[in-house]
Length: 121
Image 1 (cartoon, rainbow, N blue to C red):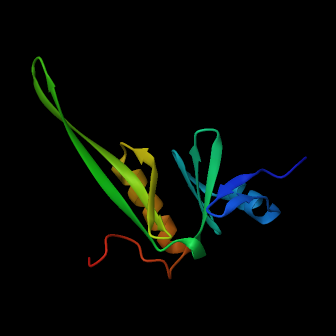
Image 2: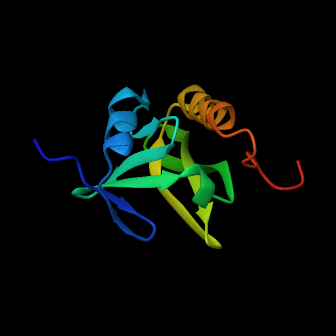
Image 3: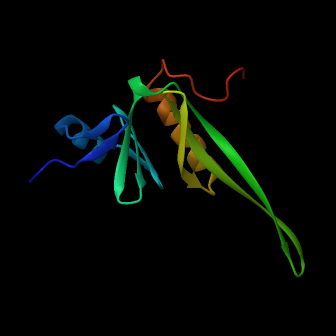
């Protein structure tokens, strides 16, 4: 069986170690956190971000106010933002704050040298 192909920052990644890491990675809904990097689905591709390519990881909160016939409701969406090469990648989104904070903690544990959280905090 052929190795799974991942879309990395610098083109396709076909590596047995990366495929094995993807299979054993912790699953956080749309996001997987492994020993070698972070994985998520983008369309028909599986994106792979190696920790040594990342500059920072943090959560972005998007709050939306919904007006309905009977009043208002507030919704919050949490996006995992990965910064690499001065560009932000934020395709992994969830309504579950604890799940995304757990993913951020897993990234911090797997890559202690990677700055995690908002700069200056």
